Length: 138
Image 1 (cartoon, helix red, strand yellow):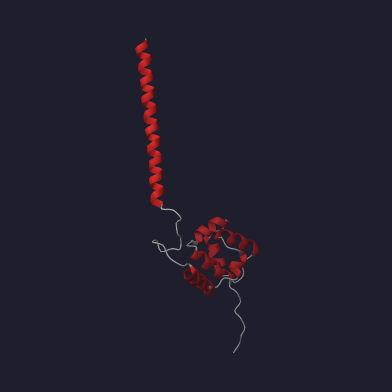
Image 2: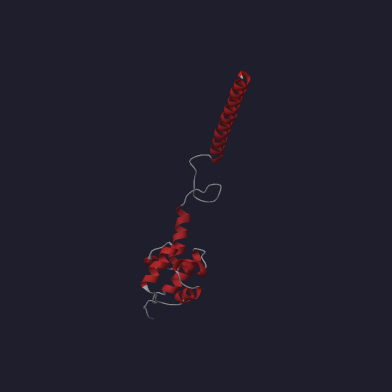
């Protein structure tokens, strides 16, 4: 039984990362200035030109090393560890816990807008009173 490892297939890794980003080949192609067919060709290639790899990594928001060392197992491991360690879940099912009540913030904004409106109305009333006095003097 051989213990030789498979060579890394950079193109396949690019394709999987692109799919995980929910990005179409056309979008990636447009971002790096090539055709969709070129991206298809890149994704079937074991090796990719280093300049193109840097451009692709930038668009995908990952490092070149992440593309080169990508594996499905590492992704599943990451997500399993992330959700296992995320602790308590809030009402939305994610690990984000607000340090304020969003409804309170909405009410505060409403109150501030109401005060502003009342000041504007009062300013208009004051202006009207002044204009009436000026007109009555003449």
